[in-house]
Amino acid sequence: MIVKALIGDDRVTNIVALPGAAKRPAGDVVQCDVTREATSDILAQLKAEGLYEDGAVALSAVDSSPSRNARETEEAAPGAPDDAVVWDAVVDQGYAEARGSWAFYAFLTLATMIAAIAVITDSAILVVGAMVVGPEFGVVAALALGIALRKGGLTWRALMLLAKGFLLAIALTVVAALVARTVGWIDASDVTAARPLTGFIWRPDKWSAVVAVLAGCAGVLSQTAGRSNALVGVFISVTTVPAAGDLALSLAVWAPQQIGGSAAQLGINLAGMTCAGVATLVLQRVLWTWLAKRRTPPGQTSNGPISSNR
Figure 1 (tube, helix red, strand yellow):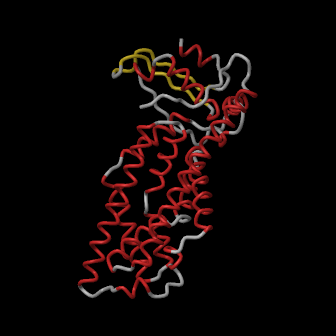
Figure 2 (figure 1 turned 180 degrees about the horizontal axis):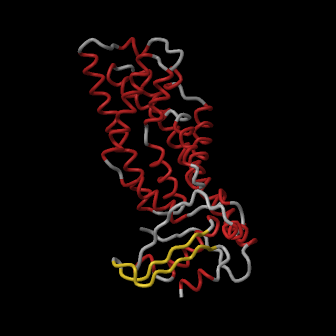
Figure 3 (figure 1 turned 135 degrees about the vertical axis):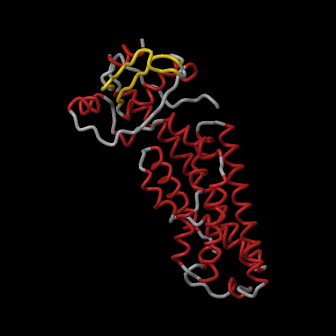
């Protein structure tokens, strides 16, 4: 039944069926190439057939398929590949990001400590380094996804992971800074002195919000469109980790005039990226559903993103 449906869909090609080849779960193995624009539709059909519960579905990207049948398959699907969102994959990635791991806490703590050193040395290069090392955007994207698709479990997991991650990173950086202060490596003047290259970290302004919104849009688009290389630009655009490092250092040497500014910078960036991510996801959902309905050939379906909770 499933194989016949795939064969009859012009957006699917290179179909291979291996009866009885699967052992766990037991059953047939079916492989096929699906153009990105049709992936959500095909997955919705497989889900309706019960494969998500009784079988297994695995997705992998094909970097290149230089053949005529692949080009014909692409032409049969509406829209452009970069405009399509494979919602099942995006949701699965969101849950993976929100799961948390020791690596997430380690990278966030190390990035916050690097940012604190950047404040002490007034080094813009170290600020950029701290931004790249910080792993927080994936969790912010998961939070935006949970809000946009009304998945309470995902929203709560991502929110708690962000809170616990930054609290731990700031706390450990405070401890490290107190040790450095005790041995005479730093003092309050290292934080309160003029910092022409890093002073912006604790002085948020309207541009902080603008950059956070633009970075949030770019980051979510890079993930939904499969352009992960663009995330590097997002990492070095927002001052979440640098603000956390400045906040930790200000607490350690007690520079109250900078504590509020650093906390505000951190909050503005996280809130701006989250709101922009939600807006981007909702807009993608509406636009793609509208375009697919207008351009879907007769006899094919046009399914939006999945809406079930996990």
